[in-house]
Image 1 (cartoon, rainbow, N blue to C red):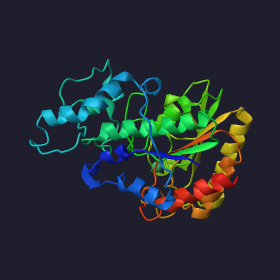
Image 2 (spheres, rainbow, N blue to C red):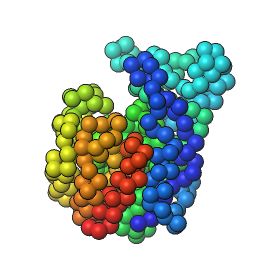
Image 3 (cartoon, protein in one colour):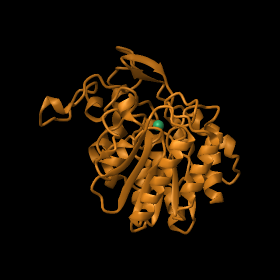
Amino acid sequence: MPVVWSDRCLLHDPGREIWVGLPTEATEVPARVDRILDTLARPDLLLAEAHGDEILKTVHDEGLLRYLQSAWDEWQASGLPEDPGQSRVVPYIFAHPGLGGPLVEPTAVWAKPGFFAYDTMTLVSEGTWEAARAAVDVALTAADLVREGERVAYACTRPPGHHACYAAYGGSCYLNNAACAAGALDSERVAVLDIDAHQCNGTQQIFAGNSKVIVGSVHVDPRAGWFPHFLGYAHGLGAKNLPLAPGSGDEEWLDAVRSLVTWTRESGATGLVVSLGVDAAAGDPTSPLEVTQEGYREAGAVLGGLGLPTVIVQEGGYDLETIGPLVLETLLGFEEA
Ligand SMILES: [Zn+2]
């Protein structure tokens, strides 16, 4: 299958995450895509083509797009990297709904991130906007290929996108690549099936009530203490959510993938976007699921069995030793179906 990517996706360097107030090592690092591409070893990689903002503006609020585009430059110009010495854009106050309203976009550079970010884990560096925007171009280029007749195309993107909401960013995601791919497919009905270990709260919100795009997700139960915590329960905003207990392995996970596929078939979907996170694999530092490489290969086959025009978009997967083989197995399984 065609593999699309952009070297501009490497420009984002979060440096670290802020978790419970402390800086922790970044997990969403540029080496992730390097490892995937090394494993796929494809000499015929396709470079993403630049696309206009038409679809992006149907997926995201223009205020969020404007902010992300200027966030780093404003932060740097404000002197915050020197005093107090914060080299990344990071919020300290949040536009929480409990404040009442109306909530107004603030003027202070140090307050703005909390108007658009919903966590402290998703830092903005020099190059974040360029990388996130390139990731959208990768997804849209893959969607072009499918629209032009390819059965399937793989968008090797980073930063990931499925936690990015209509007007807010978080969960290491800035722009929702999979949502853009779904918007770009010309199928009458598109299913977005998300097999990342974490529930796709952004994709779910963007397409809530949408008549063209339906969203299904298998993920670790947020009730067990996992991101995105507040969302991802069985009955959420019209999405088909299948939360699994920590420690679930191939059997439970593949049962859920199969039921998402059955649901998709019954829905009459004529196009498919797969949000491919490989962080449900055993050993991934960000989730307690225990899926094997064989499990991912079988998931690829199950999803490929739908026989729909498909864009596969990279989401999570944070173990640098296994991310490449896990993606490769999934793509091989899909092609064998
Ligand atoms: Zn994830």
